[in-house]
Image (cartoon, rainbow, N blue to C red; front, side, top):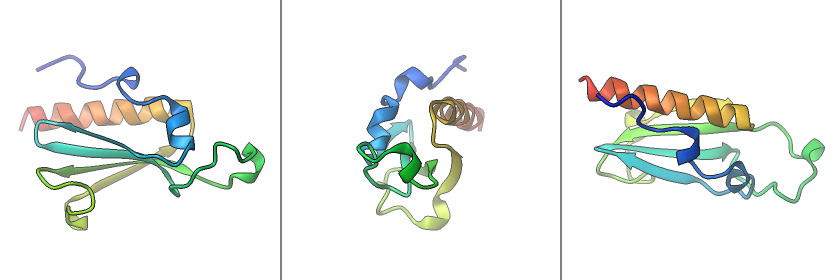
Length: 103
């Protein structure tokens, strides 16, 4: 088993998520999506006018993509919409991969 499967540096820069874009990835037969929730472009909106948001990570078994996968097969975890939240999301994804490696 590897020490680390995914690190913060493996994910897109935080500004990517401010533009309302999702990041999709996979590892073996595990698929994942990381995005701002709600998914909207707030990059040019002043921070005090952006409203509440979270960083949502969704995991599901492949081979289907996000839109085609059944909702009951998806695992959802929310984190703060911040760089610290990105660190937490990467650590959570890493733990999920390690758990699946030992199954």
